[in-house]
Figure 1 (cartoon, rainbow, N blue to C red):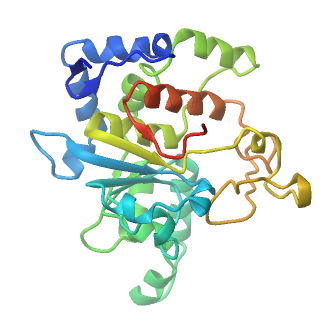
Figure 2 (figure 1 turned 90 degrees about the vertical axis):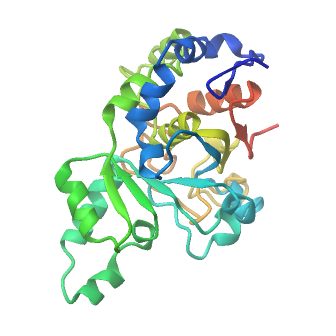
Length: 289
């Protein structure tokens, strides 16, 4: 297949819906621009090349059923999102984290928690969320004050940087989406379409890496209509998260179905992962057959 700066230009069955991205990466300087706006290569000290292999690890309970820890740890770089834990789950999700991406709610929550910690340095360190501490780098969506509060809680050698909002605007939230997809989303009553930080992490990987595998990006078709706290025959076949049996998010339309937001569209994003998989731009390890 023909490639442009490391991107395979496969058509696939859903090729038309990838046409905006295909056209964008053919434009002179676009890939380099998005790599610079992303900042991931610079953050990891990589210059003059792309990362060879990257694993982007989501939070789906599918990782309980099909653990991939050893395979994930073999990647050159490992990206994680929000509060998905590693300690105690290494068999499922691996043990390293190169970059952890935190969305605005998670950034603010943890910044508030660490700002309220009291006691000696040792006592405070013991109370810092382990998911915040054990990363090479953390990318946060928030103010510099939020970034600084989180940075104060990290061990030496780790870094916290603010997400470049221009990457989302020009590289992740625009080029990946066909006009038909956005129109269908808005037809459902939503005023805007806002990508999740999970999707943004995948976009960072696609611009930074030669080969991308995504893990734990899964929500079963039947489970979409079930609640995470349901019991018996109504229970989800696959837990929403690998690290908890029930998930509640008060900001969702149905808090017990934490994928039901008016502005996010999990179905649309999962369809995009399939399109990218079919076009050989990434491997969705837990893709529904």
